[in-house]
Image 1 (cartoon, rainbow, N blue to C red):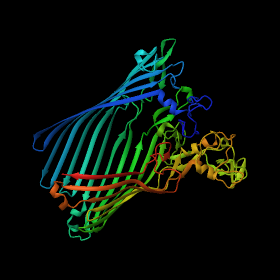
Image 2: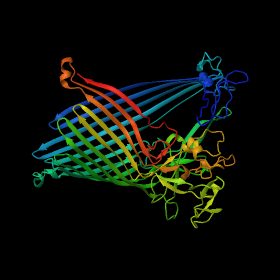
Image 3: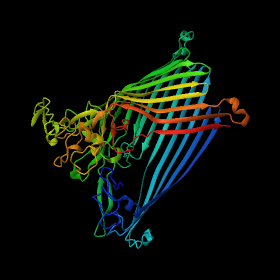
Image 4: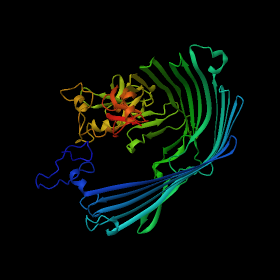
Length: 626
């Protein structure tokens, strides 16, 4: 029976073989008898959601309309958390513990717009002006008690010692917005927009900012010289340029915060918990888009090709600061990044008959993402590098570096050289910037060492794929249909931050290891093993950020497949049913990938941790409409 909170630790029997009583010993915080402890705590939670939307439209004059929308959303979350005096979180001196928590989330949005639309002969005009306001407020309360008289009285009021806390947080936003649109004969299109936003997440200096856009399109197929075309059925070009912005995820990055939760001898005390940047500014994106859309052969072939370019300036990010301050990071505008590329999609009707239809769809994105400028200190010629960890899961599973001219997802760490076949030890390339052969010894013609701390960290990979997208196939014959949806990724790297936990060669001596590790581990009888030998003296190597956990991210996956049958109408008319469809659906049914040990479909940072992988699912159902 598995008795471990951390699945990487071995199996434990639920009872003590000497006494026959439940096994209650714990090994740090990583292993315990869950069968026993699961009966010694309780956690219940409930959520009540209230939502209301009011809308009012007034037709003032012909073509002139005023519209007001007000929405209110409230979520009340209540949670009860109890640990008995026998639970490891409730043992002496706590002697049982209970918490009652309440979170109240309120969001109010008000929007008022004035719209004017007019058509004069072949000219169409649309103008909009409006005002929006948004208020977000969250209230939190907690009451706790220790030293409970009985497991049958898990309430705060019965506790010998009680304490409580309450606080709230939130932010507000206001917007003045406008838009103008014009088209002539559905052939030529022009548009422009302007808005001014204010957000309380910024200080007074940069609280308000202006954003705008312009765009145009030309429906070339409407021109006389293409009306008689027997091949071309649609041709349209469009382009736009404009700005938008991103706000900080935190509410108070622009101001220094003090916390008064610290107390000394029952006297109130405070401490600084954040270092502010009063000049914090909006992260502004400057977007350029150009596209061509087409249709051929009675629209049997349709598609589009689009070029995009986005310059993001005043990038917002938590950057490391000296620990002398008592803090590890602070929010700053750090520089500029650029994303550019091409998106394309193509649709083809291969067969288009009354009883047989078959169409294919393909799409893809080619993208290049780079850091173009970082803040410079003093008279530095280049921007200051910023090392940061993947925020997913708060487990620091992978490390990246922002460096001018490099990818936004540049993995940063040590270059693992592999295993020394003579002794089974990890080998690390030194990567001395001045000499390729500097090191304790040469390995594969390069300077190397057995001690990772002697090596230099470098950019070891790129999480941005060369291309990603998908393709579909939709086939239908006399009511029977087969729909397939594939996704793919070509190139780029993924970092398996979880694999190091199951391929540990000494840091956690007792951990369970993967079968792959044992199959490829160096031993005296397997000197060609590609993974290092187990060694209790090699305590930190597998935990380093390195190319040992870096893999090719390319994969192809059948994301969704559906087989369905639509019953004929002549069978349904007599029972009052208009349509009936029986279907079988499956997801993630097939995957092929360069990296075969784990799910290759990873998050936006191209990393994998201990999150649940995408499962294969099967759904059977019937849809009926009357």
